[in-house]
Image (tube, rainbow, N blue to C red):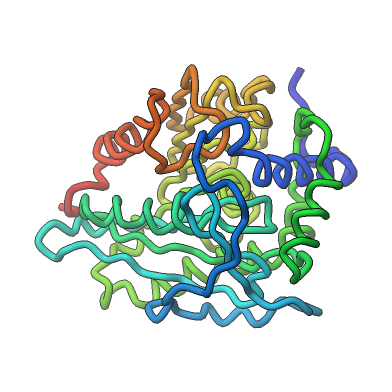
Length: 319
């Protein structure tokens, strides 16, 4: 039965956000069979190309940005200042289209390699200008051991099926992140000539919590107006589709323990609204497969996404 999103309670949204955090913290145990699964503090990598978005420091933040490695990838947490890092294609192959890349991590961490930089590099190699959004995060303990303990205690049970989010709650609870994503669109459009980007062909792709931010940016963002969006193993709850909704690409694994147990209302909502939607439901892959090389067909999501972009004319210069 179709339900109006606006009437959903804020308590449901809180459970929804908890499911995202649980997904971010436990995804490798159930999805990514990688070595080096211990969180190891590391020095912050070089970010000299990162551009501050000007949205200001996270209000009341006490812990400062820190980095750790896990599963052969690098993660940032306690991000207090949002940045955007450009990955521009060679001018000979540039199509003029652009993508904002939003890594996941339950709004507590950001999977910067697997769901950020590696995605951006792959897109740039195909002529798409990519911009990795390092958005501000909810605070976690500065001490790594305390962080691990907090996560283990908070999410020691099994995941629940996430309820439908309420747009008004998105605006309130994701305020810093939405401000960051909006600023990213604004910055790219402002410097479009410099970066050889078509202001009307800027899309967004998000992973897990980043997918939630992508959907929130599309559903409640006022001036962003993405040309296309991609939801990679994010929540698929039914939504009220905007009249100007962009084409939507979705990828999810059937053994995803967090988002594969719903009714795929997002897909139905987009389809019934007669908006372009493509859905890839892989037999295996778990949660968080991203750009990790795996022996499952979920690894093919990026090629499918590239083909989809090509179908929508994003791989060719605009005539």
